[in-house]
Length: 283
Image 1 (cartoon, rainbow, N blue to C red):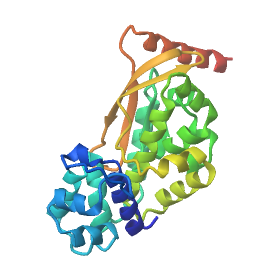
Image 2: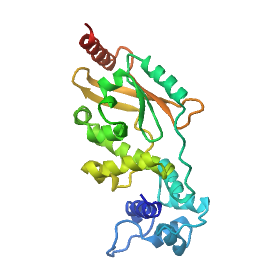
Image 3: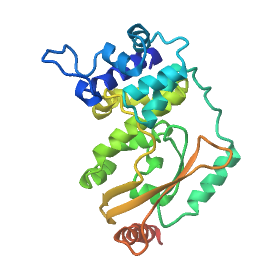
Image 4: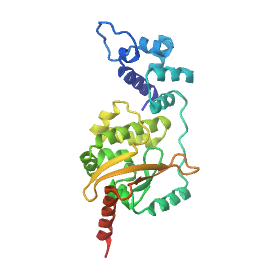
């Protein structure tokens, strides 16, 4: 992906979703050649010259100040992650972090393995699964079943038919897919020179029609929604709450778990899933 091309596409997509009446501009009886706001209308709302905004949208953004970007973001009504994304596309790229220290990852793996009643896992900087417990594999997706390059939540959402069925039956797949596509795009903007993120995007664009469709929308999201609902063949309908912790000294890692309310149908469903696994592996 090219950051200049991405900046053009992103700004045009966000300009297209605004109508003059949405931002208090007069709407005359005229035929508009493009959807949404014109460049000159957006520039006026942002308080910048049309030539200045045009250069920005064309990717000619040398020495654009943070205040100008903030004004453009406000005029476009960007939400928090979209605002960050705009800044990420313009400012100098962050260096790609080095590998996670083996000791840190080993200790986090011990931690999630010790969690036996609910799904728990560790992810890296773009939703790549670095460690997971057995309940994650039984309830959502078994990352051991795919090659290391496909061990991301985005791959799981778009490519695994069983997880898709569990989420589709609960009416959650489209929401999850849009969120994962937007999260991967935000991660790329944070580390545009990361070869692993680039490889994940390239592969998903190649093999998933749904991913290509949603990628063209320039979606931007941060972490998935806190509430998750799936319909599991053993556990039934599970209403789960996502909790995320950041390990001290490892800002690119996250430890996540899905909790069920005490004495809830979801807690009973997770117990059935765990019990069926214990029965299956007992001698």
